[in-house]
Amino acid sequence: MGTLRLPSLRTPGPLAGADAQLGSIIGLIACGGLLLTLGAVLVAGVIGLVLPLVIVGLLACVRWPALPVGLLVGMTLLIDAYYGELPAPGYPLYNGVAGGFSPWEMLVYLAVGSVVLDCVRRRRLPPMPGLIAIPLLLMAVAFGVGSFVGYTEGAGLKAQIDGLRNVLPVVVVAPLVAAVLPAARVRLVLGVVAAAIGFKALLGLGLTMQRGGPSLDNLIFYEITMNWVFMALVLCVLACRVCGVPLPWWVWVAAGLALLMFVIGLKRALWIGSVAGLGLILVLGLGRVGRRLFIPALAVTGALGWLLFSAGVAVELNGPVAERVSSLNPQKVASNTQDRYRLDERANVWIGIKEQPLLGLGQGVPWRAVEPLGIEHESARDYVHFAVLWFWMKYSFLGALAYVAIMAAVIVMGIRVRRGHPDPLMSALGLGAAASFLALVVAELTVTWTGANPSFTVMTGATIGVLAVLDVERRALSRRAGAAAGDGRGLAAPPR
Image (cartoon, rainbow, N blue to C red):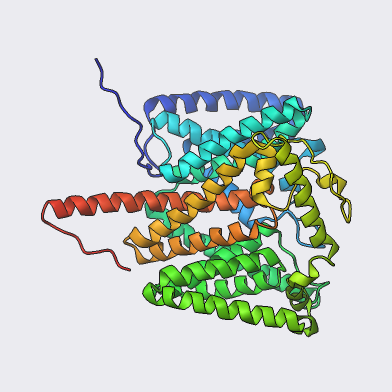
């Protein structure tokens, strides 16, 4: 009786050798592609020559699944759906024809198919620690429940497909990245990402100055994806500074540009969340000193903020950033129609959830305005400005639980990388990533991006995948150190 072989969790190199069977399959596909190309040229003319490029691209994705995953993350990072009032450069990428699949969405499915085929062929699983794998599985189950409830409530099949487009990146992107990213390449990949973020910040600043400078009418408003990425880079660089990890000068320049664009991005929720992230960095980065300083610093910051708001100093300042800061005054929420709408919206959604606390409303089922609304947004009745309620409303109580579990697991995973990874840079970046997700959790108390914005979800999912790779590497190195210590050889203690 044969021995049962479990799938290996080791990530093979991107140029690992393929077996002979795969080579035969690729050869047959190439021959078939040649025949199809000849037929396409006879039928469609010169445009039929594009077919070989498509076939070659598909074969490359099958051979190297890191290619479609890298293209998905890279294009999401570099190409935005819109730039404020400027023409939308990402419109052809993110929007399908006549409501069909967009090229970006097809790239998501191509990445999923390529990685799944590679995992089956190599008889392995992505190196996802159970800490995050279980919440992701729970989110997939919650989506199934929410879709079933929505369909039975009359939402229709199209609404369920639209829901899949939003939630699929929540479940699959982290495993995709973890499956194709070797731990030895993390440093290189993160360097490329930091350079790309600096380029986007410089581009936004240049376009703003070209339009006449940083006035409210001239600002280049990146979508939320880039605002969170800017904040994440700044927090990671601050974590490296607090932990005493040196960085190249160009990373500091990129972080400075990112900070500038983050400030003029006017995302109030992320501003508040970044303060919480900075507090986590101080507490875990400075050790006992940070724990002693955190509470007094938080108290002083809160007192100064209250004095500024209550005295109306922020109202007297000029410029779009000062105007946005002044809107954080709690006394202005009731008088601000948009902020007041969020409170009324939340109250109505909660009434609907209380009627079906376990199943929620279902995917595609709009909430009813039981309580009066100051303003009407009829097209937004399937959305709520509170992430936990959004998942609960659409995907049952399991959806809310899965969202909380994912965020908690990511923060804990980042802290574990901070405390246990022997590479000082990776340790500091784990702390920066944990702080970025803590900031996201705080921000999503007043807005929903995760799941509701697919491109944003791809970037957060890619970050989770990198953290998963580092956490698996941390555990492997810890076991190796323990084995070496048991053999009497010993290893140096990991740096702090």
